[in-house]
Image (cartoon, rainbow, N blue to C red; front, side, top):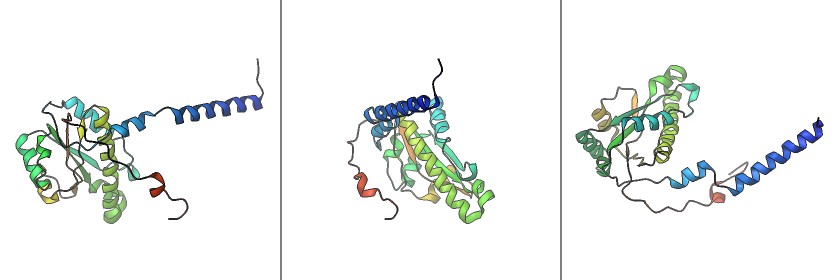
Length: 200
């Protein structure tokens, strides 16, 4: 049986409407993932396998980047003495050393500079690595682990501990492990407090 073009378009519109109504009623996977994300500062000593770390970093590398330059790199630190040095470099936030693994997202400015020059390239490298770091945090949650994005640190000290090349900039120190507690959920700003249309 053949259906007319009008009937086809009408049925397609109804299907789209039904999907949008269901989407509003049912929590989406991303919503659930975001609701579970917390900054974790207490960790159990359970090990985190190399395979798990690789899955997390692989997910982080799916971030967008300017000109597809993909300037991110990740330094994975397991050695206890090095974790303590990173914790001290992070303004003595010693909980960093308590996690079984610390991942340091780094922006390789040389990758972006090659396409955009020093000024814009450095800017894009940091933005792109920040995108990738957010995906890293979400991948950690998806794997049932916890992490904390530590942005307060002495950049020269972290670079020295990790032996980073001159144009590679550490963006954060991220301890990762099995959470030892579940911090309370903090209130978000109301949507209308942050949302603007056309002009501020």
